[in-house]
Length: 346
Length: 213
Image 1 (cartoon, rainbow over the protein chains, first blue to last red):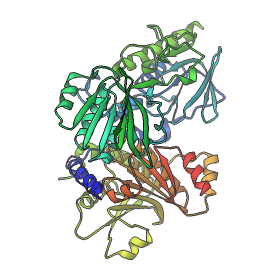
Image 2: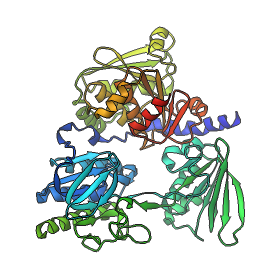
Image 3: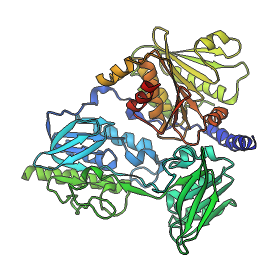
Image 4: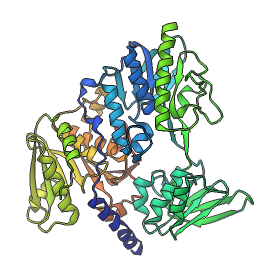
């Protein structure tokens, strides 16, 4: 019962805040009528097929359509990581724009063209040849002369015992989604980069105690976030530590942490553990087809070509330095132009 | 002070133009409205004012007990969607569908109005074969970008089958339910009290569970 009261107390201010300034994260493009929607055709051989619909993929689509090549596009979520970003202040032309809004602008610009476009399906595998074959997880196979891989990145997991078992029961990856459930509780945030610091700041406002577990000897996030976090009295940081194990019964009760210098283990009581340790490239479908670096990123040159002629890649899934919206968009444009040039020479 | 500003209103009007038939929003509240009840009513009224295809009926949870019971509404604020014939779709929103959930709210409105992509044949057959009572509760928070997809999938199932009803439950409005169902991460999907899905799942994952019930 005391815990429930804590939770109620913790939640009320948030609720009140929500209601004062009701934000609507409206996703306009999802409601366009079907006239712009053309399902992909298994019988067709497209000039270009674009895999992924973040800023790189969507920009590539605009460039391909303007060049007049037949284009198919398969994407899981329009916008990719941008759709999950609340405010963007470094994409030129917008001093401040909500992630969802920017995605809708991208999407509208793509859908003015009658390209084959499907949202939802996930890429299973890619087969190389003069004609490249892309098999989706739903079993359908599509063909194209050139491919542009813009599959982006996903959240990295800890890969420790207890992690999968406790997802949704204390193990969390989205602090904006799940922070409210940890009001008045002790939580751990893993990761000392910007996303870890932002999660810790969100949680420090409502949790009883926040422990940031950082792999390195110092925090790597921006100074402004570190200062903001240190302004809270209920936050502690453990440097040079990593998570060894997550334990509990029907929910998380404690986390076992290992000191990376001494190897010593200690058990810290916590009801929640937020994992914010960066991203992994979604290069699985092209593994063994094109060359990847050690981190699993697709190796590209400055024209976005991969180790296979006719397969191009752009954005966060590649070795391009700095993962930024504006960079991904630029890379998408470049990959599309390279693909069109390839088609001319082929 | 209105909930929706002019910019959002303009965007919503554009979206609502795509509605085909009329939809009735049944709103369950009480005489002395709680804060969220009042805001939810404003939300519904402001949206309904943007389209001549949206009707609103307001009921009192206590005085109109029978009506509420007939729609299986057991808590407020509640929104139920009825189709053009006045038939219950089984679609419910408990709590104000603001934040990211405005997307699932609009999607359900459009789909109930008949503006929807047909389900692929294989899925349509599986949904048509559901022959027992199924109750899906999708717990959400309004700051969760993954939640509307889970809500829309559940609502689409409700729309397609008279045996399925599906609720969006806003966790911070119904803290006792979030506690009861041990919600610590959203979306959390509870099917017939006995089965749970964590995270947003595609329709086949819902059907895999429903077929096992």
